[in-house]
Image (cartoon, rainbow, N blue to C red):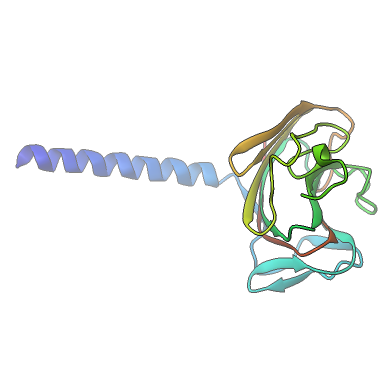
Length: 193
């Protein structure tokens, strides 16, 4: 009986220790979008961004939501849902936050690109993906993106799609894009490295 109690006590202590470590690791993350408001984001273009049941959504128009803060070396996590015909992306280190496109790294969300090597999971102009290996349409997906110096890593639903180096853009805001289809974001968080 004493042995079981000792074992149970040891397991409880281990569980509490793991919980404290996980909480400490989460403390460095900053929530950029939590489903309650668009505070801290500036719209560009005519995309019809709106909050629907705690989810950021756009169906019409074309444009971006740009973060108010600028980031250099960081990890960002983004949860997104798109229709199969959607064209969207997560833009990093936007050197011109008033125009974004062509002036940032785009982590693409587009299953139906004419050149599929630049589709979902790719960074067009920097790193390709295996054609049609990563499909995002019709389900919730998670991007975990790391930008540290010239090194860029993209992980989609736990699978690394890009591990590349490029030095074009060193620092800037984050932007979320809507260009076609239905695009939804429900969580965006970042931590500096």
